[in-house]
Length: 602
DNA sequence: GAGTTTGAAACT
DNA sequence: CAGTTTCAAACTC
Image (cartoon, rainbow, N blue to C red; front, side, top):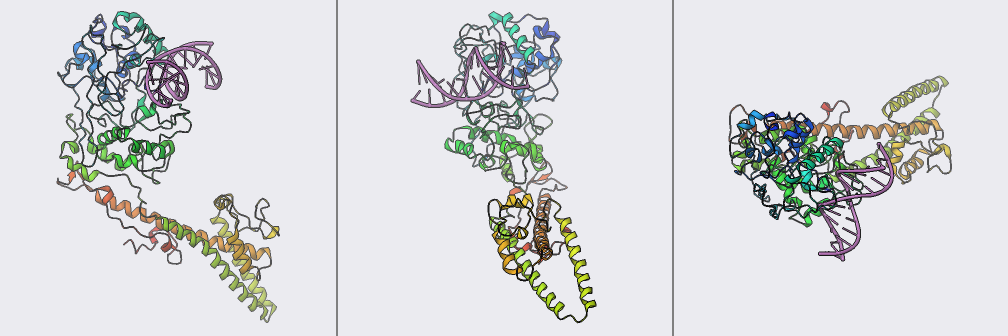
């Protein structure tokens, strides 16, 4: 069920050791309406301890207000109320003896407060939901937010009828809280039915030891500091199990990923997923309802890095399901920023990291305007370099190159034949032929080497499968599968026309034809290679500029935070240049990229 | 508010 | 592990 069992988001800590001090105490009835997964019943059961870590939901629920006594504070030694949302998996687990020293009334861990930035929706500090402390109050407890837009609403109540609220169907049970004021019937999820409840918990854990662990896992680069103000929103990460949506497009709250405000990931097995960055549907969804998750995302992003906000959210991107997509191709999702584009984003995260003393992140505790320069959207290094016009020019170039090559070849052939006709001696002719043969074999060899990726344009063999072989099979130019794919359904009119018009009169044999093809292929590949080389070089240069821009300075500087100069990534001045048309090999020295003529850049 | 849809959980 | 059933939330009207 969507939304269920998303308990303890951020509470993904590993199973905790049982807490002996607690285990000896009988449950304090009706004191804390929250499942005590660390209590005696689970002593020695790490899974249950883990469940304790997980039950405090992060997504939508039940954070004890700041300054409000935490459950664990009401129950000595029970760390349930420790802001487990702030304890990611792998982080040190608070030991019982440490729990005892948790200062009151605040949790030990300071919660980073994302700073609002101009132009960005003010992150709404989610009013936490007070866990009912009065056991005798079965009244529906207002749920201060409903997870949708952060607007305070009323408490989420379950309506279970058949599950006795003892299965994960029940949101309360899955969340690790007692039902309180719910509309459920035959509810056993209460202190009066503690035995049954614990049996149910045991059974649930037996089925799935991770049943009460958070479904939304942290990303490798994420940390709990990347939380919204309440620390209850997993800003990054992905669904551990993934969703399996079929009809909702993962854009409804049926989808656990969507409900968790995360993108679908490679863990998902959903069909027709639209919950990926760059999805038009997703974008429209957010744009259509400004109060919708976009706001949450803004909160999320603000907390993640104080920078990557709605811009990245709304920017179309690649990454269908955000899996192994080339990060250079498009703006990354926030997941990408976090997961995949490690370097720069990590730098940002480091800047936003909570200080060792648990205070606010340095960058955040500084004037929030300091964040403004980091209002950056990830941009691929090659952004602005490749323009649509460049692509057109490149295509034109690659079209004209073989044509010109054919012309040149034909002209050369004509000249050679004239020379041959005028040849006086047979010996000299033979000598020329020998030279030509050598040249041809050399060309063929080099061409084959270059086109080792399956291209056989230069070969004389005939591909019978080629669809556009019409009159003469021998005139059909074999093409590589890749070339065929690129050609799609278009007939090879360009090549055929140019060759027939130019080469046909002078080239009558396959040898010459394949020689022509080899020459054309050589020219095209050389041209394209040089374009790519130049592109790579531009990327390198741009990267270098960025590197220089964020290079730490030896001493502190106002525009510097955490020793990283605050130079806006997106404002690094890299000129937009035409790439391809100028990259013709005719103007470049073919060779290693370093030798590419980069005068325009320089 | 009733009925439907949906997908996770539970079950086989 | 896959298919089916159960369940309750989300959604629609």
